[in-house]
Image 1 (tube, rainbow, N blue to C red):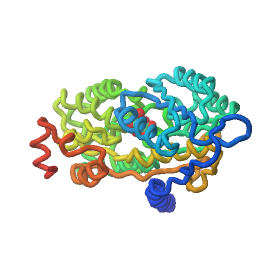
Image 2: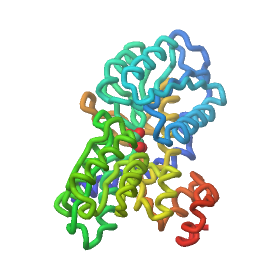
Image 3: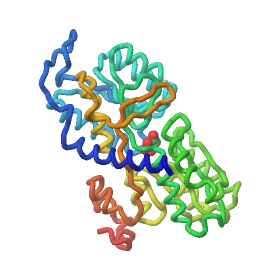
Image 4: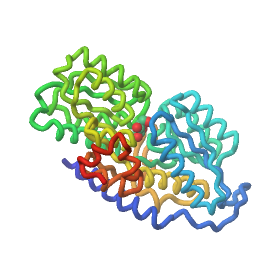
Length: 369
Ligand code: BGC
């Protein structure tokens, strides 16, 4: 109860802050010199290394990358440069990408780790080279200077609560299957923790998987395995940690003729369309702009040697480091009822993008127009 209240307070504070972030642009002053040598502080001519973990999940190329690049430009009078690398789910490749960026003398790194533990030495190398590191979305181990993400335990709780709501009185009438994310991603452990906090004791968990590399095809195979192990008639719902995997899971369910509530996360266009069509029960809407903007603000401030005090109001601990300044952005459960008030209102998708020919009827049915 106490933890929950505290968490709620953190979320409210983070929400207020995310709003004020957009307005105040605290790291915005462009004064100071552009010289990059000696003890002189950096000006607008900074080089930001951006490292994202994979490109199968739509968010990274569609939202995170363009939003961060745009904000960096905005904060540096168009002078800041972003050097980008996507690790395509390969932790070894991501270590090499960090080293290349160190060699190329970036001024700061924004890092979304494939494997939070495996990247630790590279984070240390950046630190040793005087390059600050902002952990993005996933909290990498090692000497991280700042972090921005969502409250990921709350994401898991939100998914679990929605699944319980969808099951109603039938929650104990059969078994649910849990499809968690990749075990190399610390967020996956937090989603799983939050979901278990809500679901344990309220449902029977028939099968549970950690999904290798977050891959939809792995979730699809695991779902096929769960169906043959538990039997078609006994499965009443599926906890899926994200929308990409929900796609693979729903394909397996459909092939077996099963229609049960499935959760998700990311508010991907395909996920939102499945929600419209009643194939997926919910997603978690995580507004990417405030997360991306916070990362850009903190990266620019760190590169320019400015304080993070006005930006990062929270603190988080990683397994290796304590008290990392953080910005945590609040999340919303997304179901058929609030598509208009969330992703449409925030300009993530237009109604036309969601309600294509294939989904027109379903959109009309739920009054989405
Ligand atoms: C992110 C999710 C994403 C997943 C797979 C997690 O760390 O928070 O938004 O779906 O990784 O890339």
